[in-house]
Amino acid sequence: MIQSMTGYGKSVLHLPSKKVTIEIKSLNSKNLDLNTRIPSYYKEKELSVRKKLASNLVRGKVDFSIYVEMTADETSTTVNNAVVREYIQQLRNVTQAGSSDDIELLKMAVRMPDALKTEREELDEEEWNQIDIHIDEALKEIIQYRKDEAKSLEEDFKVRIANIQLALEEIKKLDGDRIEHVKERLQKALTELKVEIDENRFEQELIYYLEKLDINEEKVRLANHLEYFLEQLATPDSNGKKLGFIIQEIGREINTTGSKANFAPMQKLVIQMKDELEKIKEQILNVL
Image (cartoon, rainbow, N blue to C red; front, side, top):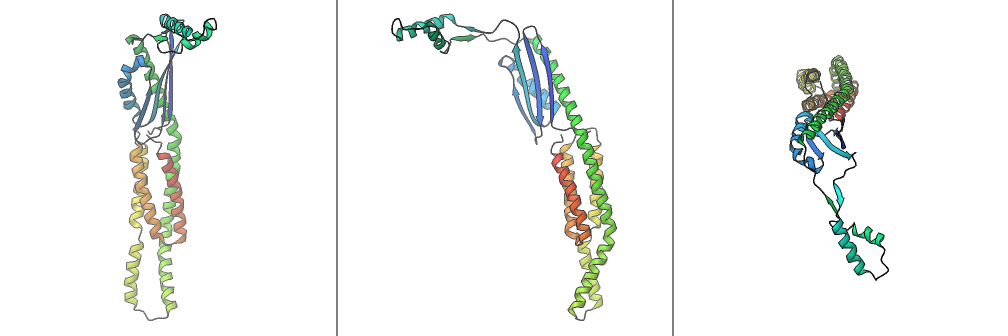
């Protein structure tokens, strides 16, 4: 079963002093392009998070974020009183006596270096274990999103492959008429030249020319590639790269058929097949 590379997963954890929101977004990409936003006090767990995301999501442009919102009254950032007082005193010394405004001086002082101090919060392993469980939940959500997104892609692929198969059947029916059309056209061209021709030599040249226009091998290979695409589409694993390679082979056979067709009704069918194939190519880039 195929998966889309587009997906979204979210999980929210409520702790006694904070709310932790985990978000995972993904878009299509040739390889895994992983970006993480993790608060500094969880940074030591970043490597394990990256490994988990890589093993579960495999490919895509993935943005992973952990947002922390403090819900308790306590805060890890406090005013460095001694430093702020010293700044205010120095600012008073700069200004003229009697003209200083303590409120304005305070506004300036708190902008100075080291006016605020932040105590580094140590990693709580028990807290992280809860967060890790919610990361798993967000991963399950994004994987399910990818599967749901892929269902519509799969149906679209089947419809377009079926359309190409129908066009191929029409081409097979037209192939006999095409050969007769080519023979008649060559015969007419020779007749208009009003020259004597060796019938045996003409037959030999005609056979050689028709062999150049023969598309039997292309028809067989194209039919096989179309069936193989459907087989791979039905496998349990999502294999977007392999499906992309099969589409390339299908394109080659369609192009060769078109270049050899030399018959307007058949070329119209080739154009229809190319149109269906282009629509598949656009969507196959989003398959995992």
